[in-house]
Length: 365
Ligand code: ADP
Ligand code: MG
Image 1 (tube, protein in one colour):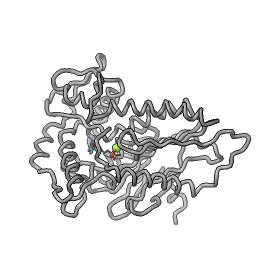
Image 2 (cartoon, protein in one colour):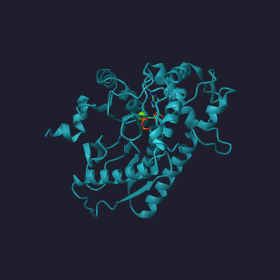
Image 3 (tube, helix red, strand yellow):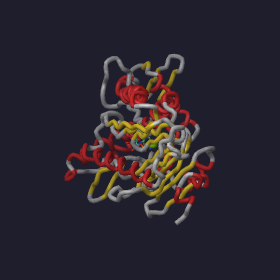
Image 4 (cartoon, helix red, strand yellow):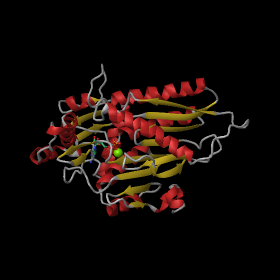
């Protein structure tokens, strides 16, 4: 998605840190020892051309050509989803998010299966009552996006959006006005001022879709789509898990807050430290509380570990907005979902099951 909320410089820093992160994470592991019984080698590819983030695929394959074939399929799928989920650009004959936001209030729009699945999944969650992640909140989020983009371009003139404008927009964020027809695979907005912003879940959906391909194509892989990581089968170098770092919220410090040892799991973090702008010396980040219409200040980061990346992405945003107590109640009600919260005072909380994965909880120092 070519939203350009992250500057080139920030993207380079992100790339440098992600390389550093993988270096750090693997430095804690014994060096892989290739043996005759494991004739697979480790390969890796990094791409900056989709989802406005750094995408890295690491995988085991018998040779470079086999890795490239599988990686080509994975990255083709990522490119295709990037176009379908793009809210800022039109593509010939594609009823993508941009098209939907401009036409769905005029008449029902037939949309690609991936977009239909993503919207229906989010609507089901909303109907079940977890409403802190609301992709129908485009009217409010686009105001924040506009002010943030302007504030990043001209920091000396950075301003907060007027509360009256946010409140007026919040009259148009009711998911009931997103009408889906699964027979015809159409979407219709019965409120003409409603728009969708799928930034909270698009990378999670994409990570699941690509992991589905990679499970068939590679004996073992680690996919990183910005803050969304999907770890496949255990690496084929003698280790029983992939090491996934939990970013230190102070991004000027190298290293990680923690390392999670996982396979066949996704790890997704929402944090306040990548996408933000500064007004009068105060930072305003990109995760907006639907109640206050302001960036939520309860958390610094929330990391979700489970098997579905769209669920992890959805929950990382929702639990970022909720208090620890309310988020903990949600997490404890869900099977197979573990959470790590980092609060503004630096304290770290985690669900009980996180001790099976997080090194700091396995060996408290
Ligand atoms: P990131 O995209 O940085 O990984 P998230 O997954 O938490 O972080 O998604 C944040 C994005 O989701 C924002 O950029 C915005 O587009 C959108 N968003 C922000 N707040 C909400 C919210 N309460 N509900 C739904 N979408 C949101
Ligand atoms: Mg999210």
